[in-house]
Image (cartoon, rainbow, N blue to C red; front, side, top):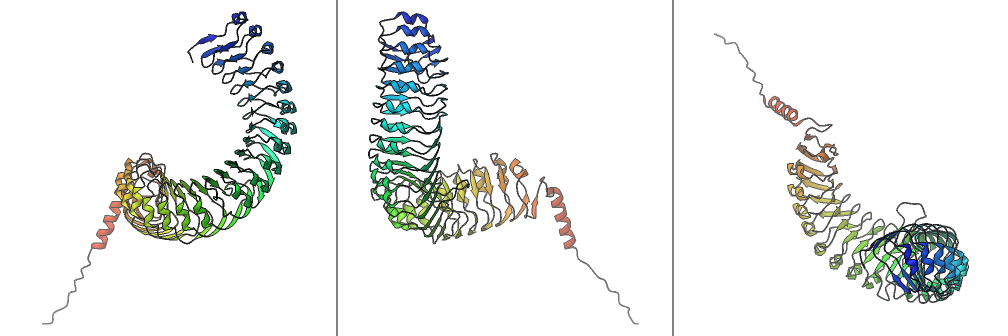
Length: 551
């Protein structure tokens, strides 16, 4: 790595005996000179990581001795020259991260000695040429993040040496060819974010070396094939955001090396599997139902199984927005590494298990939109890493525990639409990074603690629909980051803080408030009227009765 700048001089063509040329990671600009055609003995050409522009010259096809060509990470445009097909000694071709356009030339199929081919992150269009099936020695073929369209050619099954294949983030359509099942050396297959349709071919079960399979964000239909049980080396499985139906096959339990499983946003139904963690390596499991409906919903039902407590390495468990019923199994408290737990928008009943207090790595806990009842267990005071806690829209009662003030990393706290009573704990004022605080629609009483004015990062505050009384703390004027304030339908009185957020706040239903806010009397007038009312009320009527005296 140097700091070379300027352009590549055309005189470079005079170095006719040059075998190795590496100008990579500099600040070289301009175009690749056509005089490069004279370097017929050149075996390695590395000019990656510069500021080259213009097109790749057709003359590059004269470099018959070339085995490595790395032009990646520049600003090259135009099409990939068909003359590359003449370089039959080429083993490594790196053209990624440029602005190349046009189609992948069919002549690329002549590079039978190619081992690695990186064409990704360009603007390539057109079909994938079936001639790539001739690249029988290729181990890596990357063409992701382009604008390719049309089907994946069946000839791809001839690339028997292939270990990594990635076409994600294109506009490919049609079915996944069954011939991909012939690529038995394949370790990575990324086809996500395309428009692929039809069934997932059962032939994928032949890919016994596969450890990373990502087919998300397509239009794949039908069930998850039972042949998936053969992928015993699989660590990552992404099938989310498709139109898959049926139940989760019990064969998933055989994938004892599985680390990440995402199958949310489909049309899956049936019971959740009981034995997902018999291998003990699963870290991330999501089966969320689509929240914004543009595909049919997932419809998992039944109860959460206590066997999930055996998922000792699980860090992310999301079963949100389904039809799960029953109580939360206390065994989930045994998943000590859990960092995110989302059980929201189901039909869960019962109480929050005390065993959740053992989840000391938990950063996000979402149990909103269920029918959970009882108190917040004191054991949750040990969850000091919590960043987001949403228990809204349940049937929780009792008081809001003061230990919530120990959640020093929290930025979202939503306990709305429950039956919490008593006072708002002043300890909440210690959560200095809190951005969203929603305690609305409860049975809270007493004054708003002045300590909440310490929440300098607070942007959204909702304490509406309670029985809060007293003044709004004048210290709230220092909360300059506030954007949305809702304090409506309480029993608040006194002056409204002179803060921009309060000028636009929702404050209706508090008859005692005053200030220069639309819908409220100025405090001077309000005070005068109160005083006048008090004086009238305080007057005494004295009646003097004069009686005649008889002499």
